[in-house]
Amino acid sequence: MSSIAWWSWGAGWIERSALLPFPTPPGDRLYSPVTMPNQPQNRAEFVASLPRKRMAAGVLVMDGSGRVLVVKPTYRDGWLIPGGAVEADEAPSETCRREVAEELGIALPVGRLLCVEYLPAYEDLTESVQLIFDGGVMADSVCEQLQLPPDELSEARFVPAEEAGRLLNPRLAVRAAYALDALKTGTVHYLEDGRPVAANP
Image (cartoon, rainbow, N blue to C red; front, side, top):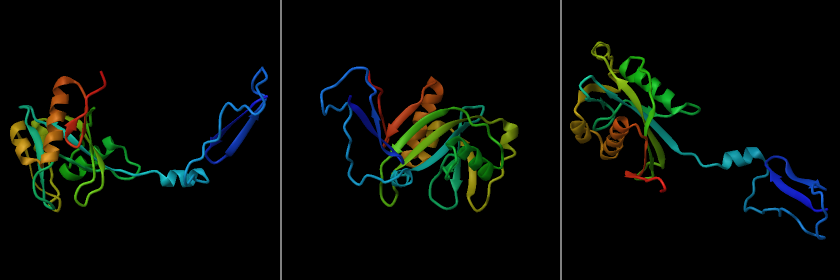
């Protein structure tokens, strides 16, 4: 009988003999061992060797007139949409809820995903995955409750989409434009370094 062998992380080689109901030629093997370079010795080493990517998540918030909420940080130039870096063991949608609470002082329901973008490393930043979620339409009564942390934000305003495109940094402006389109069309856009990646026909 032939034997089947395969690799299981943390368990080593497991031999299973006499699994087939018919004889096979001597020396015949259904599966051959695979030798990988620098093969981890256990699951902990394997998990530790996996690459990590930075992640950030933001929300596209509109007012009743269809204008986009943008915020001006005190620690950098330009404008952003509400959001921030995804912390360890934190879901991206939870990042949005946390950042909105910290930056605007309100609880905001986070809706569906609108846009995902992969950004390769540039300047002093490592590669990252950026996401934008639907933050819904903010009522005027809620707008009046916004409380900005003075050490993080100096201003928040609703502006037309065209103006938002001019205020946001170029990379975020492209991502926000695709998020707006996804909001209107009911789709989700995937970008790589600012360019949409079309689905296979």
